[in-house]
Length: 109
Ligand code: FES
Image (cartoon, rainbow, N blue to C red; front, side):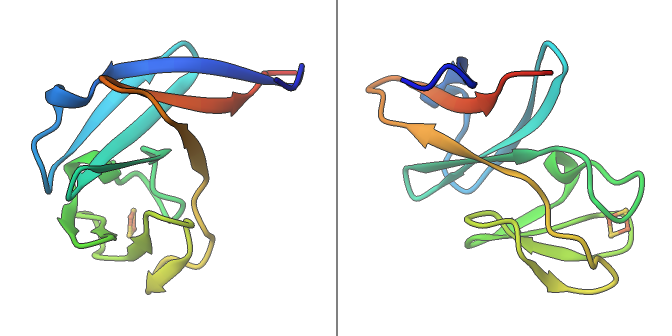
């Protein structure tokens, strides 16, 4: 395990129905946690375009649509897939765990 990352347990997998996204706050982190067909993904909750909260957006497959101006991101890699967003969003590595969503996050400086 690297010394530059924190291992953080976010929630139970059962907290998120398939095809849904929830917001989880942990310390400084405000995160959106997604369940796509039993696979879990984690991104920042804040849209890179403005005040939108991605956990309040619309999830279709691996694409989250911000409900503020309808920009879209791929939750697997954070890439922008529809304007007006231009800046990719941060994604987090989800670690294998039987019952919980656990991520690797950089330690705050
Ligand atoms: S705030 Fe998300 S698309 Fe503008």
